Length: 171
Image (cartoon, rainbow, N blue to C red; front, side, top):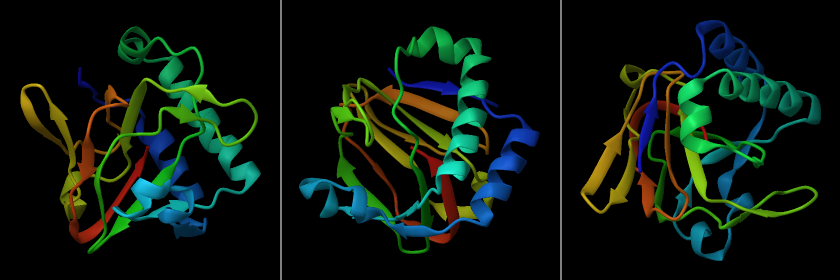
């Protein structure tokens, strides 16, 4: 199951997220990777300050709560805190599946569904497609800013190398 949602975020929400992220610090993505993922992960992740993260989470949860496609496709009971990832030229994230247990703070819980939310328009960077292996073959996804794709967390997937520009997204 791959579900694409166009315009999950509205332009004002994208602008606010970009404003917050433009002032934020990014760190090596391997800091949050497990043993297997650290061998194939080459990206940067937002080092979220608590106030920044609270605001980003409020924006995202509001957008998801008001989107009927998201609500019907995912039926979330709980959600892990988002990870904002940046890929610059030469960066990639090789084949992996998402962690079956999520949650950095407090109670950990099983994750079944993953979502990639694109925060940059596809013409602003080259490469960087999300590539998900399905029973029908590989599906390459590169959506406009504010759009998302939902897929099973157990799907083998990777982020193709960014060859020019910057890919920014929420995982």
